[in-house]
Length: 299
Image 1: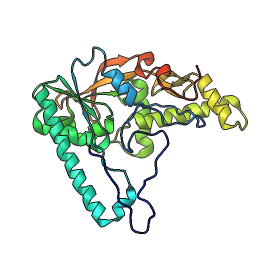
Image 2: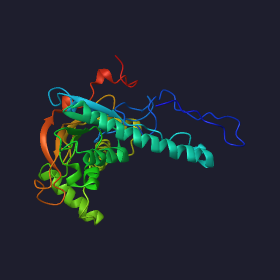
Image 3: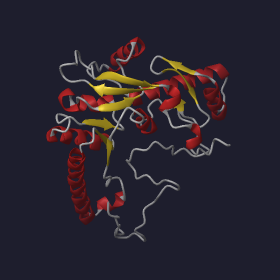
């Protein structure tokens, strides 16, 4: 993607935009790296899709992979959108990005790769899957592998469009009796019987639960640093992710799962999205500690 230049808005002294030191990933891009600083507490990551997705589709799982990167053009220089001319320019760039995305899918189709990897997220992923269905990519014998896909995305797409999609999640509401029982409670509390939680909602619940367990174990009114240390010391155990640990760098470790979206004929009831293709052991599901370059870990 060509480098984008920005023009100062009227009344401003500079056209520079603010940046985060050490951050090279554009806003909105999927990443497996941690943006946590050395002074921040660890997060219990019940839904780490970046590194996990790569692990789940590596090795012998995928023989050929055509990686399609997202053309991220939004979320930059927000003040420019106050300018009418810049807004028109942004709209044109969005249209160019959409055309480029279609062209990339066609190139991937022509490559005859067995698996086409979608290295994007959110609406971009959903649009890519819809376009792939229009182009007959899956019907032609190729498979799509989403590097950051949630059950909510599959629900939005519908089974006819999403069928055959391969993805990695660390939680699936219909995985076992524990996840089904928790989802039943989730439905009742939210009065949302037709919706299904994904790994991000499950991760928030599990992280909060473990935090509360750590506070209860310490007693009194402990400071944040003591609670974080206790969370790392205690093993995690909940009905959503099972047993696990929190590493020194704050990453939550537990198994992950490689799923394939069922066809409409295979889906027997609402929310029956996935069939399990493989279980990724906890010690293989996430990026190794030594490769994280976390400032909280020495040695």
